[in-house]
Image 1 (cartoon, rainbow over the protein chains, first blue to last red):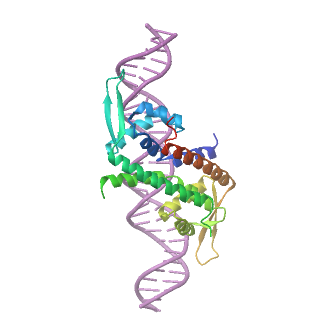
Image 2: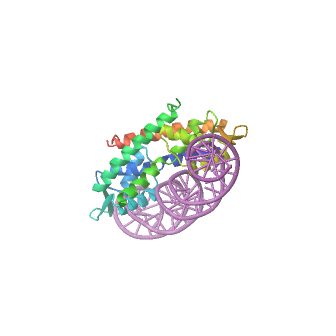
Image 3: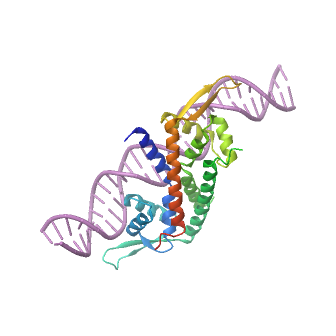
Length: 115
Length: 115
DNA sequence: TGACAATAGTGTGCGATACACAGTATATTA
DNA sequence: TAATATACTGTGTATCGCACACTATTGTCA
């Protein structure tokens, strides 16, 4: 891979940053477990490594945005996550922030700022 | 500041990641120097610390996306930056990537993925 | 029985960024 | 003219999320 492409990859990766958190939070109105989230997000077009998602879920729980509960009734134990109340508030604010960023970037890209 | 708000700040900061690069590249069809970019971007609604912008500009130059040239004719020496050819290509690709990300996130947020 | 899928995790290095700080020369104002 | 602000560029450092390689266990199915 050329050097330019490596840099491009890095830049795109950087752009995606933080969006995974929003994607995850958005799916957790309904309880989901990690493994299901991986395939689910993948289906929606947000591919994610398990080794990326699991630490994220634990972090969000530690921060109080998610609640978790083990389900040991099924054939295999699953850890279900769900949005907490503060998690929901934070999610709303994040979406708002996202929209502002998107709008501002649109303007910048279309050079509407050049007057 | 409450703990939740600190986390929120971090998350929003994370969301903004990488967008500054796009913003900067978008303004460099015309040559600009660092200080002018700071105020310019600030006007457009993309506030940025000088201590953040300058290293970014140098990095982008080192990566070959920007060319630079000192102007010592004016009262104060200014370092003008300009998109290189590859810089322009990369910028186009970044915008494309950004649009895809934005679209995908929109879907996720509006729960269009739940079918 | 042996391989694959389901399910959850850890460890680590990289790299961008925010922020505090530094430095110099020119305008501007008192 | 002395003092203060502003224009302009930079450096150093700590943080922190993330990608990725890796580990581990248990059930399922050929």
